[in-house]
Amino acid sequence: MNISTYSKEQLLSLISEIPDPEIPVINIIELGILRDVNWDGTLCTVTITPTYSGCPAMKMIENDIKIKLKEIGINNTHVELVYSPAWTTDWINDAAKEKLRAYGIAPPEYISFDKRILTGKQREVKCPRCDSKTTEMISQFGSTACKALYRCIDCKEPFDYFKCI
Image (cartoon, rainbow, N blue to C red):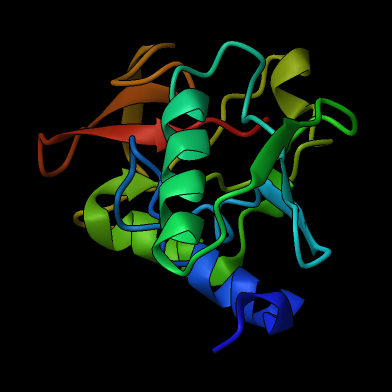
């Protein structure tokens, strides 16, 4: 195929093969960080939004995008980081949330503008292993900054909860 004829849909499909480096069961489209792809036949501009401003995975994602596009002959790629609008867990699609759960990470249960926690109400986080609602937070910070560490009271297993941002 002539590289100048790649459609936006073909490029999105190709980029959807790139997993999140910290959570390999979901890709960067499912996570909601891929914002746009523009290809003019000579330059491919890929726009991504980090999950938070200090996310260490963004450089690896940028490199993975460039490698993936280079595999099909697109050598001139610009990856643009866009911080506005800020990424939110609302952008994680339902299929990705189910993949997180199956992987052992409790997905965000609420929408980002749910402010009940500010009034002292604890979040009800279901255990991704046994579905119990009897869980407790061990630490605000889990294996990555975007996750908190929880423990299930019923099955006794620790698990990460993807924070609702």
